[in-house]
Amino acid sequence: VRDAVVIAYCVNEMLSIVENMGLMGVPIPEAITKAIEILKKKSETEDKNGGKE
Image (cartoon, rainbow, N blue to C red):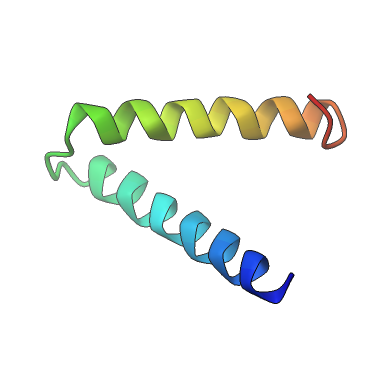
């Protein structure tokens, strides 16, 4: 369980860094941009449904 929490935290921070780089104008590959959008949508869906899809 501990490893999963650490991995989730690291992934969340990496996504945040990539998002901020994009806002600063750093070119980001389209595949990464699409992956971030998918993860955001999934996160928003889980938030609205109380963690259930």
